[in-house]
Length: 216
Image (tube, helix red, strand yellow):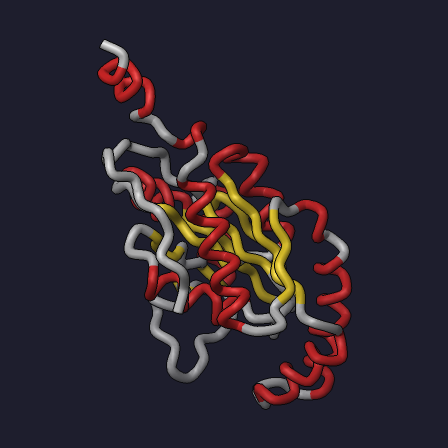
């Protein structure tokens, strides 16, 4: 059970944030993301567009927006992505209009993206971006997790491990880092980060009006 965190009793308005979770494949970011979405009503997932084939059980528009390469290139040319990257022979991108609509609705937006996407997003949105990197306990443990999933061939697992080493090397481009020894503990850590970031003075857009009323 996640801890009960303080809320704002005065209902001060605040600016939404773009909350980035990154990790090597198999380190747990997708699991943490699902737990957050179930537990945080003010948090909405940014659904990426991708050129990779749809997998069994996935739903277009919920898991990803599945598009062909030609459509993806058109979206890039039309500046319809906040960020995009080329990963394992496929392309992934964050549709700009969707994110802007969520922020306008007063929501925080969760991103499950890699270090390249996090870097691009930070260059665009700066202080509205909060970046969290999740480490596996060790590289051997990461390989075991990938093998236990039984969804990839040994060759694909080798490629994912090589990419993991590269991803971990970019840890210093993040605001927070956590080691996922245990999913529940890691989840609580991410929840604490979200609560603290929401309470930052720089995000409290209604604070000046409150102070004026307080000091009349």
